[in-house]
Length: 135
Image (spheres, rainbow, N blue to C red):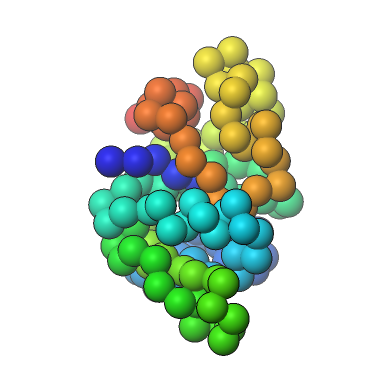
Protein backbone atom coordinates (compact mmCIF):
# COMPACT_ATOMS: atom_id res chain seq x y z
CA UNK A 1 0.00 0.00 0.00
CA UNK A 2 1.16 3.51 -0.80
CA UNK A 3 0.42 6.70 1.15
CA UNK A 4 -0.55 10.05 -0.34
CA UNK A 5 -1.49 13.59 0.54
CA UNK A 6 -4.04 15.70 -1.35
CA UNK A 7 -4.70 19.39 -0.85
CA UNK A 8 -8.04 21.12 -1.01
CA UNK A 9 -9.05 24.66 -0.22
CA UNK A 10 -11.85 24.28 2.34
CA UNK A 11 -14.00 27.01 0.80
CA UNK A 12 -13.97 25.05 -2.49
CA UNK A 13 -14.28 21.51 -1.13
CA UNK A 14 -13.89 20.86 2.58
CA UNK A 15 -13.30 17.68 4.55
CA UNK A 16 -16.77 18.20 6.08
CA UNK A 17 -18.46 18.33 2.66
CA UNK A 18 -16.49 15.27 1.55
CA UNK A 19 -17.75 13.36 4.60
CA UNK A 20 -21.34 14.43 3.90
CA UNK A 21 -21.08 13.20 0.30
CA UNK A 22 -19.23 9.99 1.24
CA UNK A 23 -17.24 9.79 -1.99
CA UNK A 24 -15.80 12.09 -4.64
CA UNK A 25 -13.62 12.09 -7.71
CA UNK A 26 -10.45 14.15 -7.32
CA UNK A 27 -10.61 16.58 -10.24
CA UNK A 28 -9.06 19.85 -11.25
CA UNK A 29 -5.45 18.62 -11.20
CA UNK A 30 -3.60 20.52 -13.94
CA UNK A 31 -0.01 19.87 -12.97
CA UNK A 32 1.79 16.99 -14.66
CA UNK A 33 3.64 15.80 -11.56
CA UNK A 34 0.41 15.78 -9.53
CA UNK A 35 -1.36 14.01 -12.43
CA UNK A 36 1.37 11.37 -12.53
CA UNK A 37 0.85 10.82 -8.80
CA UNK A 38 -2.88 10.27 -9.40
CA UNK A 39 -1.96 7.63 -11.99
CA UNK A 40 0.19 5.82 -9.39
CA UNK A 41 -2.62 5.60 -6.81
CA UNK A 42 -4.02 2.12 -6.27
CA UNK A 43 -7.33 1.03 -4.81
CA UNK A 44 -6.96 0.82 -1.03
CA UNK A 45 -4.11 3.35 -0.77
CA UNK A 46 -4.52 5.77 2.14
CA UNK A 47 -4.64 9.51 1.54
CA UNK A 48 -4.19 12.36 4.02
CA UNK A 49 -6.48 15.34 3.39
CA UNK A 50 -4.84 18.75 3.79
CA UNK A 51 -6.77 22.01 3.98
CA UNK A 52 -4.66 24.53 2.08
CA UNK A 53 -4.76 28.34 2.25
CA UNK A 54 -7.31 28.38 5.11
CA UNK A 55 -6.33 26.30 8.10
CA UNK A 56 -3.16 24.82 6.59
CA UNK A 57 -3.65 21.53 8.38
CA UNK A 58 -4.14 17.82 7.78
CA UNK A 59 -7.67 17.03 8.91
CA UNK A 60 -8.50 13.48 7.84
CA UNK A 61 -7.73 10.23 6.09
CA UNK A 62 -9.38 8.98 2.92
CA UNK A 63 -8.78 5.96 0.75
CA UNK A 64 -8.61 5.39 -2.98
CA UNK A 65 -11.75 3.50 -4.04
CA UNK A 66 -11.30 3.74 -7.84
CA UNK A 67 -8.05 4.04 -9.76
CA UNK A 68 -7.41 6.73 -12.36
CA UNK A 69 -9.72 7.45 -15.28
CA UNK A 70 -10.40 10.38 -17.62
CA UNK A 71 -11.27 13.61 -15.78
CA UNK A 72 -14.99 14.09 -16.55
CA UNK A 73 -14.67 17.87 -16.20
CA UNK A 74 -12.51 18.17 -19.34
CA UNK A 75 -12.18 16.56 -22.74
CA UNK A 76 -8.40 16.98 -22.63
CA UNK A 77 -7.02 13.42 -22.43
CA UNK A 78 -4.00 14.60 -20.40
CA UNK A 79 -6.01 14.88 -17.17
CA UNK A 80 -7.29 12.12 -14.90
CA UNK A 81 -9.11 11.66 -11.60
CA UNK A 82 -9.31 9.00 -8.89
CA UNK A 83 -12.25 8.31 -6.60
CA UNK A 84 -11.76 8.83 -2.87
CA UNK A 85 -13.90 7.91 0.14
CA UNK A 86 -13.46 9.18 3.72
CA UNK A 87 -11.99 6.83 6.32
CA UNK A 88 -11.75 8.97 9.46
CA UNK A 89 -11.23 12.46 10.79
CA UNK A 90 -8.05 13.06 12.76
CA UNK A 91 -8.60 13.44 16.52
CA UNK A 92 -6.86 16.78 16.24
CA UNK A 93 -5.70 18.42 13.01
CA UNK A 94 -1.95 18.57 12.37
CA UNK A 95 -0.89 22.03 11.25
CA UNK A 96 1.75 22.93 8.69
CA UNK A 97 3.55 24.73 11.51
CA UNK A 98 3.74 21.49 13.54
CA UNK A 99 4.97 19.58 10.48
CA UNK A 100 7.70 22.13 9.73
CA UNK A 101 8.83 22.02 13.38
CA UNK A 102 9.08 18.22 13.48
CA UNK A 103 12.56 16.85 12.74
CA UNK A 104 11.10 13.53 11.58
CA UNK A 105 9.07 15.35 8.89
CA UNK A 106 11.81 17.64 7.54
CA UNK A 107 11.83 15.95 4.11
CA UNK A 108 8.06 15.62 3.63
CA UNK A 109 6.75 16.75 0.26
CA UNK A 110 4.33 19.18 1.88
CA UNK A 111 7.33 21.25 2.97
CA UNK A 112 9.69 20.57 0.05
CA UNK A 113 7.08 20.99 -2.73
CA UNK A 114 4.48 23.17 -1.07
CA UNK A 115 2.54 24.00 -4.22
CA UNK A 116 2.03 20.41 -5.41
CA UNK A 117 -1.61 19.32 -4.89
CA UNK A 118 -1.14 15.53 -4.95
CA UNK A 119 2.00 13.97 -3.49
CA UNK A 120 3.35 10.70 -2.19
CA UNK A 121 4.24 10.18 1.45
CA UNK A 122 6.59 7.74 3.11
CA UNK A 123 4.95 5.31 5.52
CA UNK A 124 7.04 6.80 8.35
CA UNK A 125 5.75 10.32 7.55
CA UNK A 126 2.16 9.08 7.47
CA UNK A 127 2.60 7.31 10.82
CA UNK A 128 4.29 10.34 12.40
CA UNK A 129 1.40 12.59 11.43
CA UNK A 130 -1.00 10.11 12.99
CA UNK A 131 1.10 10.28 16.19
CA UNK A 132 0.91 14.09 16.16
CA UNK A 133 -2.87 13.86 15.67
CA UNK A 134 -3.19 11.75 18.82
CA UNK A 135 -4.16 8.57 16.97
